Amino acid sequence: MTADTLIYIAVMAGVTYAVRMLPFVIFRKKIESKFVKNFLYYVPYAVLGAMTIPAVFYSTGNIISAVAGFAAAVILAFRNKSLLTVAIAACGAAFAADMIMSLI
Amino acid sequence: MDGLRDGIPIGLGYLSVSFGFGIMAVSEGLSVFAAVLISMTNLTSAGQVAGIGIIAAGGTLIEMMLAQLIINMRYSLMSISLSQKLDSSFTTPHRFLASFGITDEIFAVASGKNGEISNRYMYGLITVPFIGWTTGTLLGAAAGEILPASVKAALGIAIYGMFLAIFIPPARKAVGVLVVVAFSAGLSCCFEYIPVFSGVSGGFVIIICALAASALGAFFFPVKDGEEAESSDG
Image 1 (cartoon, chains in turn blue, orange):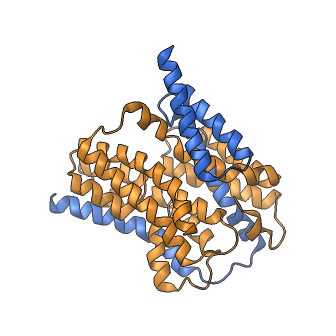
Image 2 (cartoon, one colour):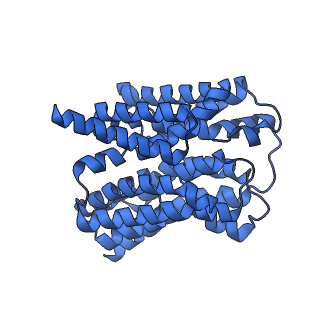
């Protein structure tokens, strides 16, 4: 590994750490503004919605197996199953759909 | 212990995602050591993929800084949000240390947890994903294709299964959450499928969707005082 590569990695890591660390260390007081509190309450759901849809349908490299995994996850999540259960079921359904397709 | 357990699905997802990153990094001309070092010091996917592209292309350091800043700016939002949930065990040194591990998924699980979070929970939650991310990168970079392609493909959906398990239960209970998720997902699709917008980078899409959908939720579906803390149980 060259010194140049090391400098690139240091800059990458430094900036990435700074955007995480600065707000985390600086914000000490509880926020009083109702709008800001409501806004922050919704941030995780908004982030997850944008990250999941439509990316989930391309996550297995095949839209049919992805839809199978997605459907399994939605059904189990709807029944309040744990994160690990839902994640494994999604993989299992995607894998099964892929196997079935390769047999046809 | 709770933290370690909650980190397992994230770690499994990271193992497969970082496996792909490892393969990509080596194919871009980086050494195995450099690939693992990047994963250990950055712990993020989109930023790392952009980063190795810039290294491979011999881009400037300014370009590297700007790219990382824009792609990872969403972590600042998450850090602010999570900073509101920390209990008194989170002294300044712990904040310096634990903030390193705030990723999309770790943030999602931590913010979905009932009540305040302790530094022990946070360290537990970060541990398995960190190991998974680093190990996956090492395996991908060093050994190339270890898993059969069909298994690798199926593992790719693990992380999204976890996301769905986080937001579907609260979306059933609260119409505000449902609208925010649906609006954000719809907006994200616009960026994906409408040609004019499709040039916007992935990190920016998440920032725009998060800001717009959260503002919509806060404006039209304000939650009652005290409800924010307890209603986000996953």
